[in-house]
Length: 480
Image 1 (tube, helix red, strand yellow):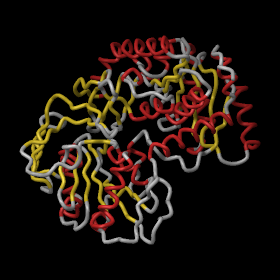
Image 2 (cartoon, one colour):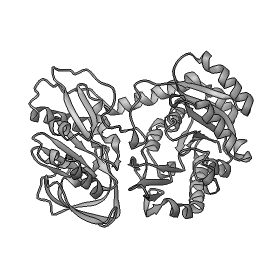
Image 3 (spheres, one colour):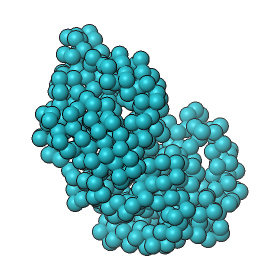
Image 4 (cartoon, one colour):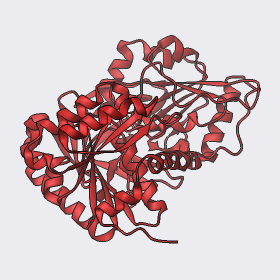
């Protein structure tokens, strides 16, 4: 019944990545490992083979363990649809909308749901690597905490606290977290982890020694900044306007393709564009610039957690006109696809009706029951909107819409299928009149994702004594 909790001094301190690295490192050593996050808040999600959706980060951590995603890995998911409300997903199934205030009323019940899911995982795996949520030092929420010390208390977990030194003030963050929590929680902290360190560690060591003297807690790992790490971003806030997705890659031919991914305010499953960025000679940039969107070789309209509201935003910022007037290819995925249709009737996510961009002769009607399915090419669908009265040809496998210059689909992850992605790039190069662009014949998105997971695991193993960690937890590593 072994498990540990990776908490963070702040959101985006590196909990998801470090948990994935530990999952991969322990799995490579022959242990049966499972990931767990009691409560996640993210619009990046994935569908499990048995049904239901979980946070994308836990699906990525499951891959690190060699597992398919399962609802037990993330029993509670909050999907923000506005600044004040989120869709509550419990064990993979949407339960309606909650506000920050009303969610507190659910927490006592949800703590039981999370604890039961973790207990079940502990009975089936050698070790469960749990990830906290936000900061464990939110003492105003401690009484109903689900994912941090509330979980640690319920399951008697040792806690490792991660701080991001790249943000600055990491020693104060770690010390402050230790100091502000209640005595019983403080006693559960068994180690600090420094993340994204650059430079000479000898300059940092005196601070770590003083930190241990003040708190009694050792720093068990100083993990370096990992250059070139970019796949499966947990939070859509990492989709920065004007920033390229992934590292630049050398083109195989004499020409490159420029992809503008529209950075919607409520973007969901922003990771859909990452597969394009894996390709040699393809530059993918998050954009809200109508001129850049008009001139790009390909525009991708990604998913949205508030389709009608984001459609109004497109019009208010001149982006809708830029898309409609384009003479080049445009792809819409899920919410982006819905915006490209003639009309949207939404009485679920954000009550209202709206005229779409009219690029497809089809109507979208939102249904109370959410579609959650996996597709033959490895993608998945997560949507309330359903296509009605379409006169368009389907795009792939009888789904979506396709015209000469526009493609639309409800399927997330479709571009991760290597054959589909190559077909798309060939179509874009032809439409953009770029015969000098050469489509790679051997790029594998799955291989690139596993390469990055192994890179994280290698880094963890080089800077964290995994054997000592297992010994501290009472886990015997397989020999041979």
